[in-house]
Length: 101
Image (cartoon, rainbow, N blue to C red; front, side, top):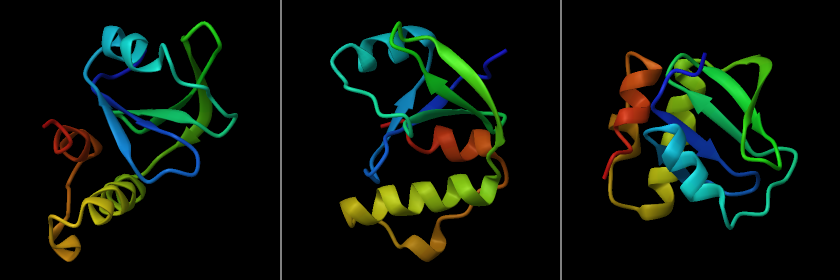
């Protein structure tokens, strides 16, 4: 079962997309062209591939809070608005929720 919220990580792009629900996933993905390396990371660290029908397919990969923190640092570096060394999270859920704008 998917633990919402999630983040969408597109291959080759440091920008992360916050997904609060399955409906937001469908809305965000309608016009995207997916690669095999694009994936969704849920609040528990589970990684999912995205099918052509915009359904999530669970992989065996579990993402750590450290890996999610690195993704968020790269995302914020692109915006150049925060001190990257101060970005730290105790949980994946905290990290994902930091992306709510």
